[in-house]
Amino acid sequence: MMKHIDKLRLALEQYSDRTPKDELLCKLILGICSESLDSPQRLRLLNRLLRELQLLPRLSKVSHPYYLEALNKTWQWLDNNLHEFHPQRSPIQASLIAWINGYLWYRIQDLYSSTTIKELSLDLDALERSGFYDDCVSGLEAEIERIERQEKAALARAIAQYIDRDPDKKLRNCHPRNHPDCNCQSIVQKLFLQESPEKMSAIARQLNIKTQTMHSFWKRTGFLKVQAIARQIAQKDSEVTAD
Image (cartoon, rainbow, N blue to C red; front, side):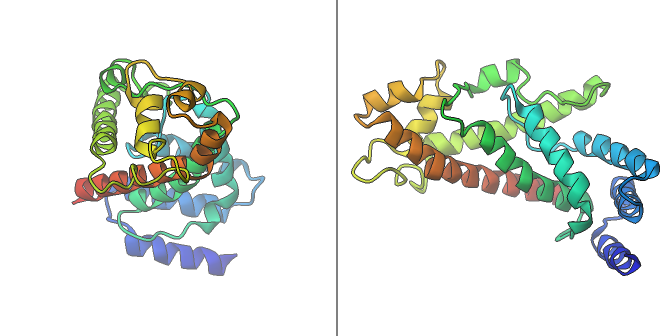
């Protein structure tokens, strides 16, 4: 146990940027990992860590009505696996949030992988008006919330603009066999980006493909392709912000 804590402490010290936020995160992580699972002190430290994490602007969020369910599952996973965290870059907050987002993205994916695909408008003006990125932490100061919404709305715009332009044709070239019109770009635009989102069944009829075939393609391939592109854009945005 002590050997693992010492190793974790060295890694945290190596990648901490020595800002108050990083130093606090390091202190909380070490404190939590040093306590037994049933320790009241561990619970207090964990609750403090979760509050701090939800203040970080890079935590992945979507406007799905069951987003908090995905987030809660992620916090449960973090509670059980925090001792496995190994920072990969500086600052600690960026490395930690990237590690958490890696798990949270799959829980978000689960929300959209049910047999009935729920329509979700990503019209960007409506997105900003509706508070797409409203913070789930109660009691945040209004100014902090405003800044976070602006940053994440900008990221949403960048992702949507990439999808519309598809400069490398990664989305247009991703489609079921013999159905080039049923490509990722077309599906995403109809499901998410237009003012009145369409249902999967309606899109399938337009593209002359079986609904189940289209749904299977989206679940197994299309969604993952879009997710990977969104991650790359978010990562680049994070690196630019960090610089």
